[in-house]
Structure formats: C-alpha cells, structure tokens
Image 1 (tube, rainbow, N blue to C red):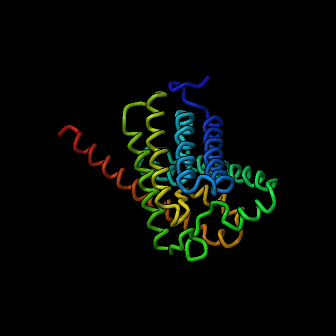
Image 2 (cartoon, rainbow, N blue to C red; image 1 turned 180 degrees about the vertical axis):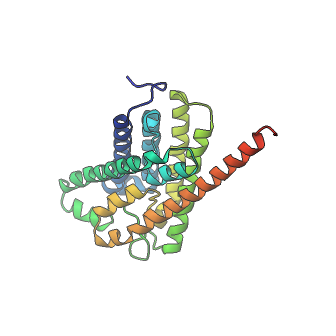
Image 3 (cartoon, rainbow, N blue to C red; image 1 turned 45 degrees about the vertical axis):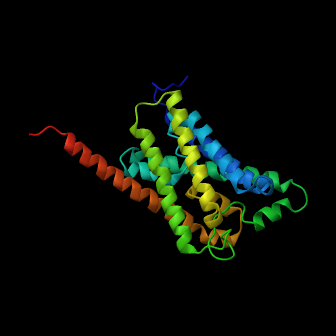
Length: 251
C-alpha cells in the first residue's frame, strides 16, 4: 500500500494522473452537456471546482494531481517538478481527458432525440473565440487574456500549496479545496468569454468531438494557457533563486 512516505512507482503515478484528469474532464463536460440548461454556468463552475478538489485530495500524493499540461509545464519551469517526468504526465493528461470526454459522448449518443447532435452543435464544452464560437461573442484578445491570466493564477495556487509544509491528508484537502474554489471562481468569470478552458488537454479532447470549426481554434487554448503558466513559472524560479541568494551565508 502506498502512503505519503513511500514514493509511488511510475505506473502508479501515470495511472493516477490519467484517471484524475479523466474524472475532472468527465464532470466538466458532463455537467455542461447533460445538465447545463438545468444548473447554468454557476453549477458548471461549482461541479468542476469540487471535482478538482476531490481528485487533488485523493491523488496529489501519487502524481501531484496537476490534471493539466499547463500546470505541469509551469511547475517544471519553476523548478518544482522534474523535466524528465513532464512528457509522461502530459501524455497521461491527454489520454485521460480524451477518455473523460469520450465517456460523455457515449452517454449523449444514447440520449433522447438529438442530444448528441445538439451537444456537438453547441461546442461540446469546447473553447472558442469570435462571434460564432465564443459563448458571449468575445474576440481572440479577450480569450487570450482570460486563458493566459487565469491559468497563471491556477499555477500560482499550485505553487503556493507546494511552498507550505509537507502535506498529509489534511494538507492535501486544504490545498485541493483552495485550488478547486479558485478554478470555480475563475470559471464563472471566463465561461462567457472562452468557455473557461485553462487546460490544453481538456481543450484538445473536447474539440476532437466538437467538429472542425472548434478544432481549427484549439491552438489558442493550447498556446495561451501554456504562456500564462510559463510566465508564472519563470517569476517563481527567479524569486526562489533570489531568496536562496539572500539566505546564503556570506563568504
């Protein structure tokens, strides 16, 4: 049995990241596609935030529960995650997100009437920009700002959680709740602009099932979250280096 003192193996780490990402994406897409009209944007945001909090609390000691390639890259740039593990983490996230979205696709396909066609016509929870694909008709600049800045905030919360004392189950729950509530709050603001992606894995997975128009715009929902994460990672690395230099004893 793996505990906080036993480093998990590679297969355990990758499996946890894959399954955690699948759960979060399934909840997000499922709430949007299957329950969106009933719960509205607030319900979608809260469901997503609570899913992130629950998954983080459950698997953070196994894989870090990044659930998002932008988070993984941001933490690696900051020096808080080994670069050698970035590719396996990102691959697990991409596969997990695709499986989560595919699950909801299968549910919608067996739904009443034109449930699947309607979900795909409405974007299948994908991001989009411009008058036809952004939920509120916002342009590329607006989407770039919310996706980059809000992803940067999420990465900053992860970094803040890692800067504290070693986390047991209680610490993971606290950090997970902070991340989940942050995701929920940011989603409420960004949903009318970009559909609140913040996550290249989720963006690719949902666009894959949403049709060519969404797929043609998916580059923005890969690029801008990574840019925001990278900026925070660079700032955190520089700040950490300067703090180390200040704390170093004088020669």
